[in-house]
Amino acid sequence: MKRVSTTDLVPGMVTYEDVYNYSNQMILPKDTVLTDKMITRLEFYSILSIRIKEDGEKIPVSEDSTYSEKIKSTEEFKEFEENFFENVDSLESEMNDIVSKNTPINPTEMLKKTTDLIPNTVTTFHVFDMLHNMRQYDDFTYTHSVNVALICNVFGRWLRFSQKDIETLTLCGLLHDIGKLIIPDEVITKSDVLTDEEFKLVKKHAFEGYRVLKGRDLDESVSNSALMHHERCDGTGYPLGLTGPRIKDFAKIVAIADVYDAMTSKRVYRGPLCPFKVIEIFIEEGLQKYEAKYILTFLNQITNTYIHNRVRLTNGQEGDIVLINQLDIARPIVKCGNEFVNLAERRELHVEAIL
Image (cartoon, rainbow, N blue to C red; front, side, top):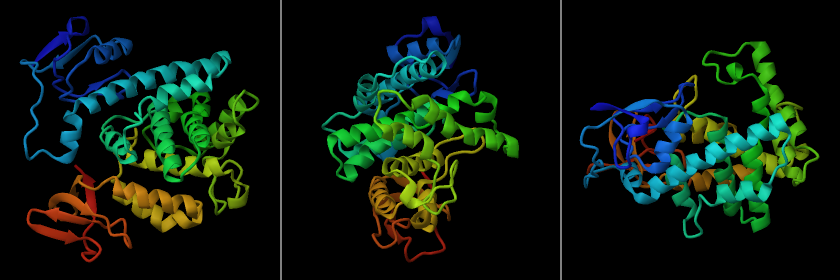
């Protein structure tokens, strides 16, 4: 291991440890093979130096590597990762200009940058393979916005929406949290429990986002999604406490994508929740809080994206998900060595983590 100035980094070097920016957000994980774009990203965040492995060689992938490790080792994932964070950096600049300078929004250009992350040849499941393996990064508004936009894009395809509606839904996901840029950063990134006053302040981001987007040359679904993505069909949401019929359809879809990404991502106050725990929560609360036709489609599809992933069970066993139980989708069948563990029958066990 040696420390190298950012100006002396060259493509092919391998990070020795996770690299964080000055806001304590991870920007590159350990064992990342550096590229020109990644080095530029370090310079963008004013990282003066990092520690790299002495040999600078790529990390070999063994035959018994997990499905996740194999995904991360592909050139396709590395390209997705580079383009993803290039998109995040661009979105950060654009969103701040929209809020602080009232610059016009170019929806076509914003959409292109995001949809270009998803080649036409890639399946919806493959998109989630990529997103599942980005979960080691700290969640912050811009990364979360791109995640939600991509999830909305795939969600729209699962719902068999028209191409125009898929694009509108993607833009709704991309801009749903723009109001957070008006809330003080120390409140948004606070690692402790929010006070009542701070929570009231955070809840204002829905109104603020609506105010920023309303009246612009955008489909009204975009501003409505900013306003309503925290509303719930049973009336328990905010800021208006609307019930199902009064919540716009695209806002209902963005709400599901938003909660799924937020709960499965690393946050300043906790680590990521296991996706199967999140799925259980959705099953327990979903039909009351979310539109049934949307939440059922999402849950049935999202569980299938975890087939082949290696998991750890609550008894410490590790294995690969081989089948989703259609009548109990939060409890898949896991192959642990030569044993098939059916979690629908082994009720004392749960999926504890995706490895």
